[in-house]
Amino acid sequence: MASFADMGTDTLTVSVQSRGSTRTLDVDQMYDIVDENSEYLALCSPTVSMSGSIKIGNETMSSTSATGVSEDYFNIKGYAVSDGRWLQYSDLSQRSKVCVIGEYLNLAYYGGNAVGETIRLNGQSFTIVGVMEQEGTDLEEGGTDDCIFLPYTTSARLTSGMISSYTITVQDETYLAESKTILEDALYDFFGSDSFYTVSSMSELLDTMTSMINMIVYILVAIAAISLLVGGIGIMNIMLVSVTERTTEIGIRKSLGAKERYIMEQFVLEAALTSALGGIIGIALGYILSAVATVVIEMLMEEAITVAPTIASVLIAFGISAGIGVIFGYLPAKKAAALNPIDALHYA
Image 1: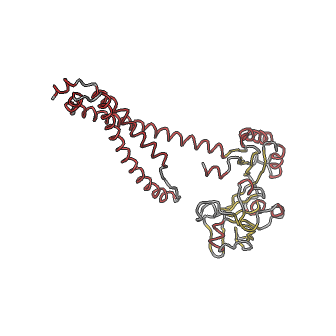
Image 2: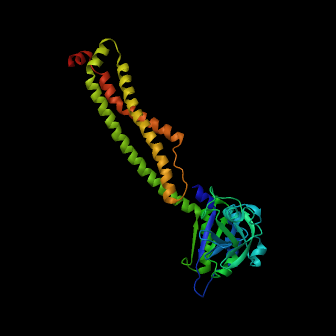
Image 3: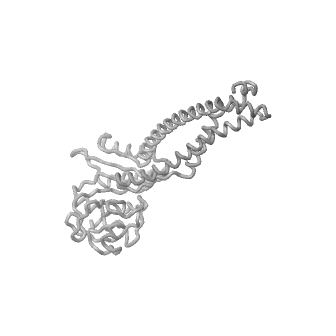
């Protein structure tokens, strides 16, 4: 959820395809659509993903992302500059060969002094005018901070020349659905068909991801509930056997004046302690498996994700395990408390 939020849950991503030779949406027309619906739509930035060689000195960057954007892109994404400046309108209008780089490139290749240095993109030399503040948790190759941003006008000239992707923010995230509908209607009016564009939002993707995760959680809860039921029945059977084996003991205690509630409390406590002990073993195994999962995920996904149970989860798990013992130990305890002392002694 945090990753999706960083990508902007108040943004809309528009992908546009040309309608042959009859209708093509250019950048100015997209900006006009945004301006005409300014009560719902706010900032707009064309985005051009570049492919090709990126070189710093004699080294070639294989994982670095290069994207052409407008001067509003930093505001859209909430990025900040730690050194130098962000792209300006004059850079776009003049198709300047300037760029802003991520903190990883700044530290790994320029020793923290990248502003004023150059970097080569597809054989063209670009001057670095700014360095982004660190966005990711770790500075690593291919990470969030291994990136380059340049004017979209320049990147469009170096690539196909056609701009087909836009990032647009909404005025009020509360009306995101309405804003998306208005934008789709405007594009439909322009193209006369909905086959030449797609509009998606991070919020919708987040909702889809959340629903998928919730489905997995529900399945796991169902499996856990079945496991608890089976475990509870096991405890109940153990306690029923214990009551049968200790019938004489119960008879002696009751004949000496033990009240029913004392007998019941004894057996309920024994059931709760048995279940709680199982809970403690399970919690210990959970911590061990969490540590193993953290290492395995990092090895398989090359992403540092720490798997760690929270204190609240541990306390809830322990409480449920003890509660299962109390619930399923009640019937055997009631049976023990209801024994007639004479019958119990006769059983001996």
